Image: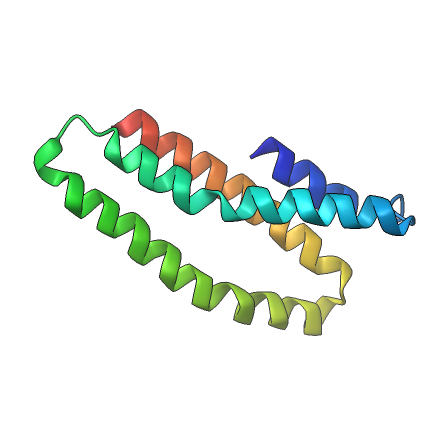
Length: 109
């Protein structure tokens, strides 16, 4: 979570003027963001209630699928309203929210 937030913050600043640094940070951010589905399913399988395992994994999968469809629409609207720099801030906030949610989900299990 911290790595994704840091990468998004760096990408939204003028400090990343070099194309190689931009490419590396974008690669790191993409890898971290796409790992949340795997981490969410892993956290769901660590539940103390084996009878609810299929429901927990289904909730994670359905939530991820729905947000994967809604996220680009929201991101596009934010870029239209605030410009391209807003996108990395949006991604950083999402990374932080996903990390906190995953931690809360894990502590509940």
